[in-house]
Image (cartoon, rainbow, N blue to C red):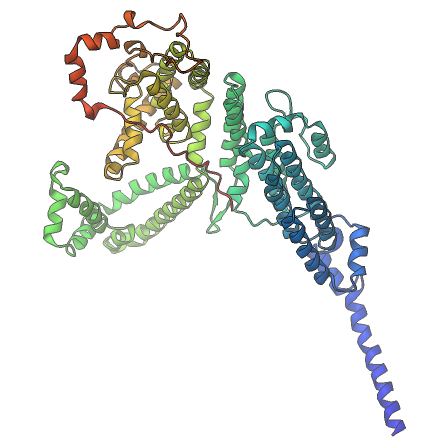
Length: 615
């Protein structure tokens, strides 16, 4: 019995010693198999980021129960936040980070807590600003322990841009950030290159939007070096130049409406064009996809389609005849009807029928002679590939609103647009100073400038630029105390804006946009050649100046309503004034009957969201 027990013990010891050999071979720090795999896939502590002795000590002190300890700390942090013990909450977050330094969600979630959930609890915007900084600091600490996680730099770009630049208190936040020398110094110490050069705004102080752009550039650099990020490349690449455009928007809203704003838009437009040339991925392992590569693809398709038509004109007719046989004769009759005679229902059916009887390149190739079928199929395959490629490029362009921002940057750097913005800004200031006549005079000049801008960039009418103009037109209408008719220089564009949002006039507004874009191309082409196009320069009837209408009489109960300044015209000297209209009742009566020529624009139209889709 004792011998058997002894043999078992010896066998156990021998088995333990035998098993220790493979474990030692696998687990050697440098030459073991696990160590080699850790080095190959860069999963070691040294590869993930900075090694912190305090963090390692805490993890060892938990005796393998790091997960339990972390859970307890997370629960405690939530309790402190709910009870508004914010100092304890901040200290607990640091302990969580020491236990889980490589768990990205710790840094993201708790930084968001500090900047977005805790900061609003304070009434003073200066205190809110300090807690936003705590969230930014928390993310920066996370970058030390996670060298190859560009998502943290990506979040930093958003915090500095969106949180400081788009909050309700963005004016105060931007001012505080520009003066926060210590915060700028902290960024520089943490390795943010360019904080004292490329991040400087027009006042030679670091700007929050341009600082955010630097963090996005760091994220892009890490991504291009091979670090993974759960963001689409086209969205990641877009934020740097987009933040430059938001910077230009911000300084314009602050009254910087001179060549400094034009330069900011010019720089942003140049970076946006560079973004358009960045390779996103290999489309079907054959073509390098960029946001500007659709132009070359369209040229290829044009050449190939011409070649295809030369060999397949008869085959196309045969394929169309075969397709027509499957369509009822009463529906085919709609195709032969003139467009002016088609009803709305027939117009919808028309486009469906056209699609049904339009043969694809494969169907045309099938009708080619046997000797040409192989060449036709190969050519058709290439055409289909290029069309699919263009659709893919267009999809990515739409997601970042590439065309809009490209046109916006071109338009905003123009002198006439800067002048129009400046005049409108100064007119709004004149209203605040109760100078009605001065405001009307500046508005009239601004509308002439906006007519020139919109005639060259019609798509701006329905976007943020158009929103700003419509708000000012609402103020202008209140000063005139009258509606705007066809004599208003912006009437055509504003009517298009209204029609575009009316479902019943969608087709009409689309045709109108094509017409406006065609005019714009002629104007821009003429400008590029140093010429003028007087026959289409004026797209609307001449402006009916506010001097043809009486300015609003100040109300007695308003203390600021002093008589208008000497620059404002008096009603007795104004042709078409209210006095003249009273003396000519026929004119007033006629104006009442022309309701279709009046624009009833909303004073506060819905503001469109900026196209900075985030994932």
